Image (cartoon, rainbow, N blue to C red; front, side):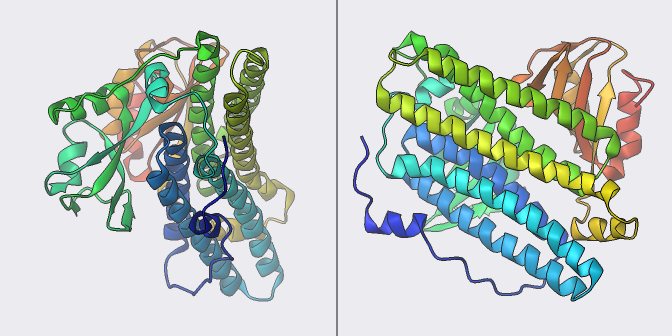
Length: 404
């Protein structure tokens, strides 16, 4: 049941626009930070809502505020770089399309934590989410001693996506950074790796099935949809900063699949009407709506690339300057020889590469959910890797495809 919103929470949810002060920083760094923070904010919002973790929800609002400031920096840099000219007008238009779409994503993430902070309870816990999750999970842990990030990531492997202490927070601290005792860190990784970390610390993570079995397929669908939504945010930025016409068609195909998946989950929710309590029904409906809005906004961002073909050739350079390269390459590969996906992922990881999604038959699978899969000839892989390791990655891909 919802309740009156405490004044401090109301101020956090309805703050005036962030005051932007110009900072001399590369546009690439601004875009990287927006991308990274939005990806992490979505995962933390999803976690905090089902875990009923108000502290984490407030951190999400702080991250959102940071994204707002970065978006302001992006528009400011773009405007100052070109001034009053035709090129400047086009550059600012591109920045506007991107920033308005990102603003939709930020608002949707905020709305997810809004449900929690206003006391809207549902009868689904994060223990239930853990039980039905086959891919990546989030888990907070309070450090009993100082630790370097690399000591965690190398051993398990897991990502430290956030470290917080005494009101201060750092998003995705660097591998060589030391995090002090008493800090609360948020770990993200495959469930078995997260559980192993906690077992080594003498902690058992609880997970449990839903008491209402009618909602099992619904929760599985929402978990899968969240992973696809996060993937859409990633693909939008890859498409934008490494415009590769050969990949756009696969991204569009994946977008169609995600739309179909959303409708499938929505139908499952409709079938559960009357069999789950009204608060849970409203809460899950809202969650689905916000995930759809994020996916749609990501879709808009990925389609900015298509403006290149509809504008004068002189603007192509403007586009590339507005959305500076992040030094990564997005590629799609058609498999010609059978390969275990887990083995391929391990090979790519050595060169900063990662599999984002696979298409097995007619079905797309977001990578965190694509475990223990053997890819057959004709299947497709959507992957990203550091541009500087193109030769090494090509050597790996030559084992499974001649047309890489």
